[in-house]
Amino acid sequence: MTLPKPVVLLAAIAPVAVFIVLAIALAFGLSNDPAALPSVLVGKPAPTFALGPVRENDTGFSTADITGKVAVINIFGSWCSACRLEHPTLMDLAARGVKIHGIDWKDDPADGAAWLARFGDPYARVGDDQTGRLALDLGVSGAPETFIIDKTGRIRYKLVGPITPERWRDEMAPLIAQLEAGQ
Amino acid sequence: MTSPLRHAVGAALALAMLMTPVVSLAVEPNEMLQDPTLEARAETLSKELRCVVCQNQSIDASSAPLARDMRLLVRERIAAGDTDVQAKAYLVERYGNFVLLKPPFQADTLLLWFGPLLILVVAGVALLMAARTGAPDDTDDLAPDMEDL
Image (cartoon, rainbow over all chains, first blue to last red):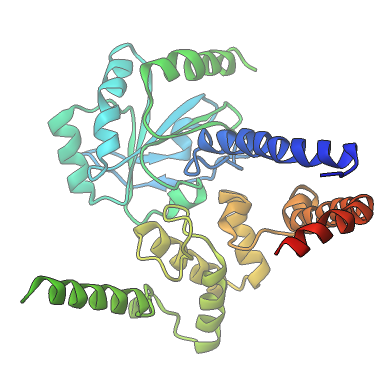
């Protein structure tokens, strides 16, 4: 081989360099959950709504219930197994006096009510979204999902998937405290 | 059935199943709009919108409940007098650009659109440079080898 030195050097380094760049890019891709979509709604006004009741002798859940308040809204359904997983965390928060509102999504309200009666009801207000129309306006892609809305009615946080005690402590509770303080 | 025959039949069946075109019609008759022109528009739009739970299917092809809700929403918007652009924008406002199966052409997607071209140009230039510097030596180098063959 009598190739000039720079070419030999380049030929030797190039594959290694390409490999390293690819490896880094792919490693990043691995930790990137394709199901986790960035929410475009954070920072935007929450849609107005008026949902019918789920529980018996209840009034449902509408925008008027949360106007001027910091609100936590949780999307659930009696058919949703991840909601069952999340449920103890919600019960625990409710027992500590945290107000959480529920939207029973794509569910027969009777099934939703039975689910709450059976496992416990952590919700301050619960509304029925059997048609899923409100969920579309909230950009919901699956249950459970949780939104935090500020006093001016803007969506400030969206969580796809179950609330964990850690996530509540580290992300959600501080944000709520900050929003309550009038931020 | 003897074993080789069974394998052959199994393989043939699997091949047949693989080759069968998947004609998915998730749209149910009761979802459709009365007006055929509006329905045609809704269908075209539905083919361009991603089912966010099944991700690589359009809402037109997906039988997921959320895809059905989105199809109904598209029809609701069209029936309400939205243009195609407005109906799409309604979903993009809520679900982001991800809901579009074809990414929009804008500043933050330039790399996506021109990335392949960029790679081609860079690789082409590199190849040209390598060919130029390497050419004279290559001929010297290759000739004896050829004689060896």
